[in-house]
Length: 162
Ligand code: SF4
Ligand code: SF4
Image 1 (cartoon, rainbow, N blue to C red):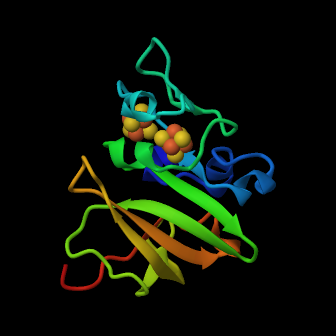
Image 2 (tube, rainbow, N blue to C red):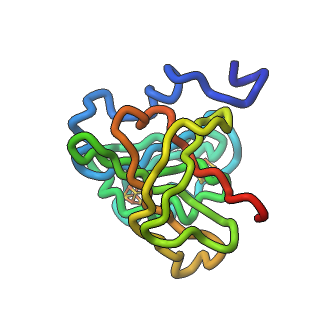
């Protein structure tokens, strides 16, 4: 499916998550970098040595969830917008996504959350808009969603007129 449409099937997405969902009680980076490409800012930017691409820069990044703190620095630094951060909070989840559109959504705004096919699947609540310190064009949106959508939610619908 991904070769034809560019959309990874759910089972492929799930492989990038921790095998044990309880790990997500703490925030963890979810890396959806499915192609072998010459790129490694995720590896070089992580202050906790949690991501490894290795000597062959074409290899896909591998994350060590034990080392990842969910700080989000790799999210700001990934030029492919291929990394998000997920954290479970009882029946809710906090999804942190890169966002480069202007204007940014406001804190406490309700936003349409979409899946990897671009379909609206739920409504999320913007808990925080975290601007990048070095990467000014990128913000990290903290979106609260229902826990049921953790394997499907990937970004938000850009409001009409933008
Ligand atoms: S979220 Fe932070 S700790 Fe985790 S991989 Fe990214 S930069 Fe490293
Ligand atoms: S920085 Fe992003 S696009 Fe580049 S290898 Fe890492 S995850 Fe993939």
